[in-house]
Image 1 (cartoon, helix red, strand yellow):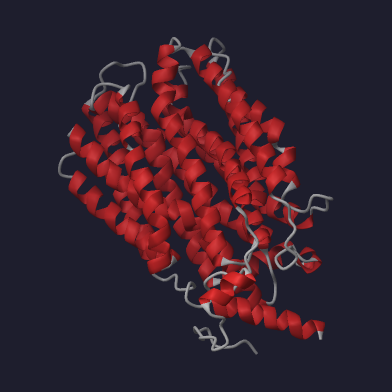
Image 2 (spheres, rainbow, N blue to C red; image 1 turned 90 degrees about the horizontal axis):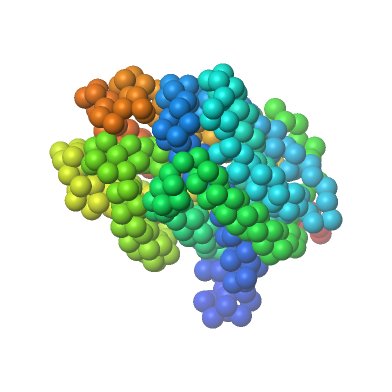
Length: 478
């Protein structure tokens, strides 16, 4: 019989000095990570965010550079994401059953390095003078390929966090490090992609040249993650028992895990928010502010809240805990977005209030993966099954569906507003659709995500859950 779900204080918890001597974290859980491990692990985010960031800007590239209709682009983005989301579920089982001298998750960082380079380049080599049907089919095939690479990286990469350490403190640091690397490459793409491609001529060739550089960088980053991410912590390595859990049974157990379900939908809506922000900003600067190069200025100013966010998130986690830190962030973002609703055409308001919204997303970016992986221990404690790969893959399923919906909504809402990428001046309906994408819809998504995170109270229970799991293992060995 499982114990009641409540926080129980451990009277035998070692002192702070003793914890340091034993290599324990503040909750008394064994630590396993060193600085080189954090840096190598974080490098993998460069590949993921390069792929995601470039796919996010593809709507603009397709509509304005190679002449694919906005509605068609939206449909391509949605269909490819749904197919990719299904692939996530399969990939989770593949990771759980992978047998390699390098481990279960680690070898995927090596195996995907070269394909990632190819996928990034192929995204921008659309035959621009071909027929519309040919361009559509090429776009569909290359976006599918890129999304499958994201899956083949993201699922094992997410699982590595749970395999390396049980320490919530170390997982928090891993999450922060990954978010820093991810945001750096994301902001570089946001700041320099449009100005740089324009400087190189603005045509398709310029985009391909930039893609080659990002592809090489992504490939190297995955190799560095492979080198630094040995699955050498026996306490958290996947057991062979995981392999025996049938696929449908794994899904059933995940949906009985209330905290995992909360994170499934919280990540879904949070990623819709991030995708909308990354995909629609270029339309805002080009048609609302009248200068597409302003997207670089807004991206550069956006670095300020990013830096402040990463400086603040560590102390905030220590003071408030993981989940509450994310809620505080979304409260700030909601307030800023509400104010911006009253001045949608103001450039200064877009800079200042947009920066606050960016700051608000940092905590979720930093610890969202940690909150997901902590549900693995809860599921193991509650149901006796440790589902690392499936927990990350099924959660990624929700993330991909959310990202796909957001990408599709960009195309669909633009099409509904009669947007035409060949026009220098857009009709009033198109301007309204751009404001919906950049201001009003992101506000709604922040509110929904905040409400979902209100119910996540696993932080206080986590140390005792880990202790009970360790006690069970000790009892089995005796």
